[in-house]
Image 1: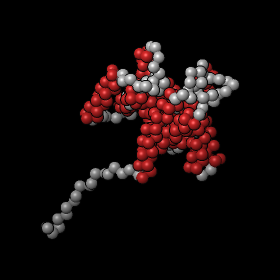
Image 2 (image 1 turned 90 degrees about the vertical axis):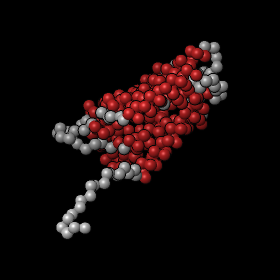
Image 3 (image 1 turned 90 degrees about the horizontal axis):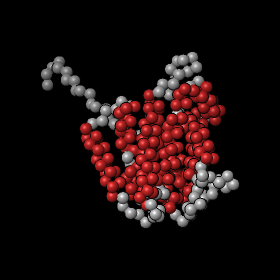
Image 4 (image 1 turned 120 degrees about the horizontal axis):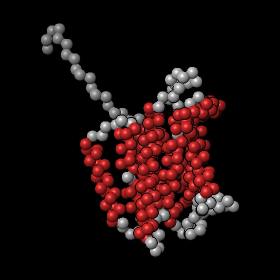
Length: 291
């Protein structure tokens, strides 16, 4: 040591800390994402879904969105410690920040298309093919993150994305048979149809997720006087998303050829209800993870 000499150490790099709530949310989201294809497959391919007796897909999507709307409303009321305050916050979002609120119609429409296509794809694709092709949404997420969020991906991440793309292509070429798939004449046409549904769902899912994240993290709301305001609650955004999804789902139900006005819940059994609850739960968990 030297008298009068002061040694200054460089500051330590910030550590990435994940709260216990975030860790639990990620774990639950992993389990939920794993069970969704299973419940969806069971709901679409079991004997209960006989020709002419299948449940109406838009009706199930509508029910899931209603569940998310109700759950998010309760969570917003809990966050604001008052049901009246929650209602006022929802009202202000439509009155004072209508342009931003209307923009949520874009991801709402994409999520509706995604949910519908996912269920239809499970009617025609082998389980392994659906699982892998739907993971193509990771490619969409990466590309949209670069375009909308301005993220820069490292070389090894681009290599991983390229490997995923090659894996998806290889699975599609193999077209492994599956006894649970609809094995009728024109199986190749059904396979192509199922792939179309799966890829459409992947594109909509990846695009909607990144767009929603951009709105949550980059859009700065304004007050009635035009001054910058605070970021709205994530549960408020979920309420708005569910609201627009319901507006889209109602006419889709009426226009659907599988909709039975005399029995809207035709074909709904325990597996279909489980799928609806699981889908609604997934939307809430995703919102929590984004937060």
